[in-house]
Amino acid sequence: MGASLSNLTEGGINGASKNGPGLGDIPEACVACVFLYLTPPEICNLARLNRAFRGAASSDGVWETKLPPNYQDLLQLLPPERYQDLTKKDIFALLARSVSFDDDSKQVWVDKMTGRVCFSISAKAMEITGIEDRRYWTWMPTEESRFQVVAYLQQIWWFEVDGAVMLPLPPDIYTVSFRLHLGKFSKGMRRRVTNFEHTHGWDIKPVRFEFTTSDNQHSSTECCLDDTEPDDVKESLKRGCWIEYNVGEFIVTDSETTTEVKFSMKQIDCTHSKGGLCVDSVSIIPSDLRKRRRRLVSN
Image (cartoon, rainbow, N blue to C red; front, side):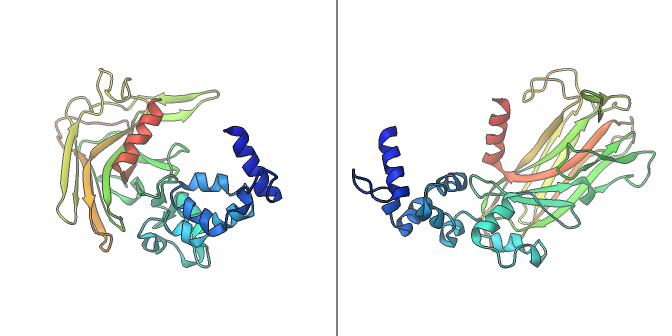
């Protein structure tokens, strides 16, 4: 099998081999038809074989099928100079990276394997009770966030974080989740160091997570952010690591309309204070992509 493929490749590069036609004899249009059934990484790998494969791998017709159906709406989130005069392949490459918009407070990207659309919203784009008072909150620069900054809570009695976004989401099933971290972390000389000096109050009452969409889909869940028992997903204590708290799923069936998502997390029982929490972002990602990512992390 390997020898046969080698012979075909050699024939494709140097012309027809003595054993018969090679890959180089396949018309570019036929190669493009095959590429319609391959993933973007597979197409890029095969583009190195010969001129016909390279030409097919640059075809707008091929990459049009890899882009999400509403990719034009995604491009409208960016300045025109970022995408004007780009080929479909270059547009895919642009969107496959995390592209910032709205003063770098939000990011959009497409999954490199499937072309599915993902969004992330920074804490900077949310309304946070007491955020302007440095006795309660500080903005902490860090490379551990895709936005390079997180909101760190020292102590507060009324804890509430709210946000709302209008997003051009193609049809899919999406999961909303908050990315949080108990403890204040920093880089030591040789390792990451986490300080739990301010971490308290999250084991007394649960935090309530909620979201509502513009077509009245709704989900809510409650969870204590701190405990002394191992977390089911991480199999370790919740302190000192980033955890994504899933709020629930919603379905988009129409790509012609923009979806509004309102989300919140709150713990407003003022009988006790709470603190020592980092709030990074909210993500809206196709549900099965999130499950796949979790499997990869666990492996």
